[in-house]
Image (cartoon, rainbow, N blue to C red; front, side, top):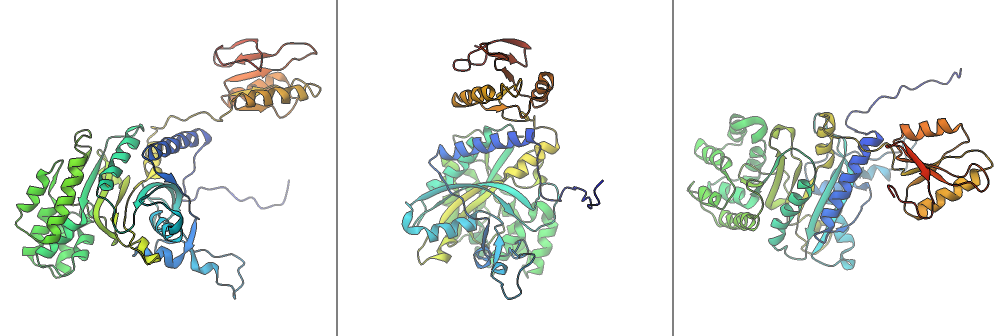
Amino acid sequence: MSDQRVIRPTPISGFPEWTPQVRAVEQRWLDHIRSGFESFGFASVETPSVENLDVLMAKGETSQEVYTLHRLQADDSDDSDAKLGLHFDLTVPFARYVAQHFNELTFPFKRYQMQRVWRGERPQEGRFREFTQCDIDVINVDSVPLHFDAELPRIVHRVLSGLDIPAWTLNVNNRKVLQGFYEGLGIKDPIAVIRAVDKLHKIGDDGVRAILEGEGLTAEQIDPCLALARVKGTGVEVVESVRALGVASELLEEGLEELAFVLNDLADLPEDSVVADLSIARGLDYYTGTVYEASFDDDPGYGSICAGGRYENLAGQFIRRRLPGVGISIGLTRIFAKLVAEGRIEGGRVCPTDVMVVVPSADQRAEALRTGELLRERGFNTEVFHSTAKVGKQIQYASKKGIPFVWFPPFEQGGEHEVKDMARGEQGTADPAAWTPGG
C-alpha cells in the first residue's frame, strides 16, 4: 500500500460536469444550435478565455464577478498576470475582437460564439461559476438596421423550438421606452429607475417602490413607473397602452415605434411566443434600445434562459469608430442543467463507437488493425480491442459500452470475417469493404 496521501474527489460547487452519456446529448444540442445560427449566415469566432481587465471592466458593474488570473508560484516582481481575468460573458470579448480586427471584417458583421464563461457569484439553482453561452451578435459601422432586432428573436425561436425543452416565452422591451417615459415624468436619473424596475420580478412592487422612494421619487412618479411595468401584450396594442398612461417625450415615442416594428416583424411566429413586457429592463448600463429576456413558462423564477439587446458604444470604446450592435445569448448550461436535474435528459450512448474489432490472438492483431482502418475509411467509428483477452471478455466490454456491432476478423488463415449485431443477437459473415449495418 502506498503512503501517498489520498485526495478525496469532490464536486466543485458551480462547475457542472456530465457523464459521457449526458455529455453526448449536450454535444448534440451544441451541434443543433450551431447549425441554426449558421442557417442565418452567422460566422463562428472564438476568443481567448482571458482578457485584459480594462477590457472586462468596459461593461460596467462587473468587478465583483471577474476571476482574475494569478500564477501560484508567481514572482513578486512579475505582475503581468494580475492584469488579466477570465471572461464573464462573450459580448465584451466580441466587441474587443471587432475593434481589433476591424480592417479584416465585412460589415454588418454577423458572428456566433459558443464558449464557456466564468462568473464569481454564489452558486445556486440556475446559477453557475462556469457555464456555456451561445451568442449571436451583429455589429455594423455607424448604425445597425432595426431588421436585426427582429431577426435575432426569430433565430432563437427556431433554435430552441428544435430542442426538447419545457415551454418558454421570449419577452421584448425597449430601453428607449423606459428612459423616455421616466424622463417624461421629470425623473433626473432614469438609469437608477431602470435598475430598480429590473428587480421587479424578484422583489415585487413593494420592493421596487421602496428603492424608488430611496432615490427621492414621489408617489406621483412611482405609480406611473409601476403602471408602465404592468403593460404586457403580444401586439402593437401595447404601444397604445403605454400612450394611454399620459406621459410623453421624444425618446419615448422613438422607442415605441421601434418596439412596434419588432412586434410586427415577428407577428408570424406562433401566438404568445414573443411578448412585449414593459417590466423587462436588463440592468446592465450599456443596453440602449431593444432588450430581450426569455424564461420557462412554468418556472419563471428559475432565471432567464436567453437574454440580450441593442448596444451603441460597447465596441466603440476600443476604436475611434461608431460600432453599434445587437445581440442575444442562449444560456445553454442553465437550460441543460435544469433538465438533467429533473431527469428529463435521456442519455445518449456511452461512447461514439460504431464497431469494435475483436483481437483473437497476438498473431491476428495485425489483421484486426487492418480491418479497423478499413472500416474507419468507410466512415464507421471503430475501435480495436486493446488486448488479446478471451473473446467473451471482449464482447462483454463492447456490451457495457453500448457498441452496436462487434467485428470478428478471421481466426485462421483463409477464414471469413463475421460481424455480430449486439441488439439483435445475430451474427453472420461480412466483407469489411462492403458491409453496411442492416445490410
